[in-house]
Length: 303
Ligand SMILES: Cc1cc2nc3c(=O)[nH]c(=O)nc-3n(C[C@H](O)[C@H](O)[C@H](O)COP(=O)(O)OP(=O)(O)OC[C@H]3O[C@@H](n4cnc5c(N)ncnc54)[C@H](O)[C@@H]3O)c2cc1C
Image (cartoon, rainbow, N blue to C red; front, side, top):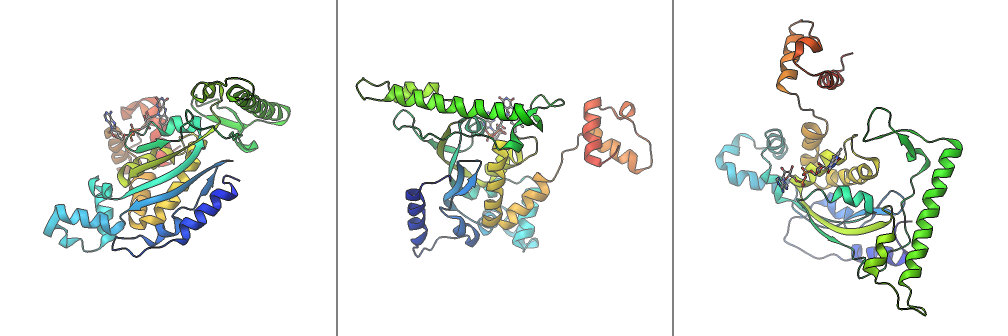
């Protein structure tokens, strides 16, 4: 259960309040406002605020193109054109503010995306909760044999049980020591800003994360990708569903031209052209390295 009864009541209260507004609202996003979507064992992502919709993207684009957009009357067509041609600034006209609860080791990956505004829970000021990410058995995987930066098959039997025990016991022991060190019961009590350094990276933190749609798509492109670590990917996937409801035309264009698309190098395009003409191109005659050739083959489904 990622949220306490008190937090759930607060969310219900926020959701019950409505106000008349002259501002643009996106009906799909209104449904998401404040609701916490559970991610991992204690995490969540929820929308706190947003600005703009599909029409706001078009409105901004039409300012820059003026009469030029007359030929693209339809909003969806215009959005797809913008996405296809990397005309990105109109997407920056939409913004979203999220409240995210996530393990610290996921936060370290997430914070690398510098184009957002972040305000994190202060473990100098407040006491962290006793909440640790413990992977589900199917995610308790072995080191990948083919990818140094990935995982392979799930651990089995006694090894899986032993690893789970270690993760749980270490988390509990570190938290017990954290509490013991900050306690002011019969002692001075260590400062919270110091005591936290002994906590493991699977403890949860929280932040508000505000980003524009263009940079959010960049984040989702990288983190909803199968190469991203599972623990951040599940957040990205939850966010994809929210964005699909918020700006359905923009999200569809993102799916088609970014998420499901691939980049081909000049050599790959050339090899493809030669193949389409019936030539038997090999790695040796393609000008690609063995690794590039493998990547190319996986893209075109060639074996
Ligand atoms: C699968 C995967 C594996 C990764 N592995 C590693 C790893 O092993 N080690 C590691 O350190 N990182 C790793 N990263 C992080 C990665 O290198 C990027 O730091 C991260 O994805 C953020 O991307 P970004 O800089 O494009 O995003 P943002 O910070 O959101 O920036 C968006 C864009 O803005 C521009 N920009 C922003 N700030 C600057 C700046 N200061 N200077 C110039 N241009 C800027 C760039 O064009 C950038 O692409 C990995 C990421 C992924 C997805």
